[in-house]
Image (tube, rainbow, N blue to C red; front, side, top):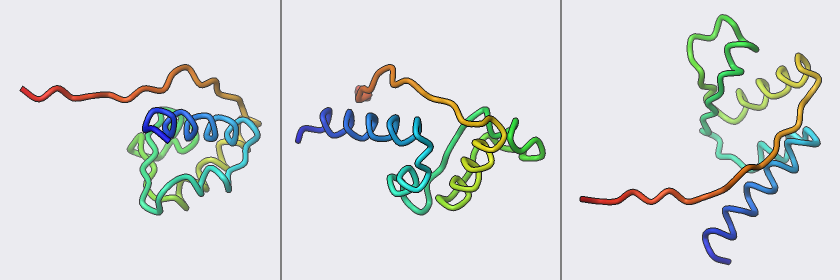
Length: 88
């Protein structure tokens, strides 16, 4: 499997798991020390001073809380691409 195909599969799986709120499968896709950055964090945790949640277990708790507050919502995958940095 080529890199772009693998990237597209991961993105498609993530979108599918998100849209059925399969938080356990989403968490299986990330490392223990994952970092999530989202403007929604301040809405869910107004006292939080950062737009980041660190660690798989903290992200799991955040997503469960987010689902409870919003009732859940779907996302659409717009595009997946590899960014190439050009060295000078």
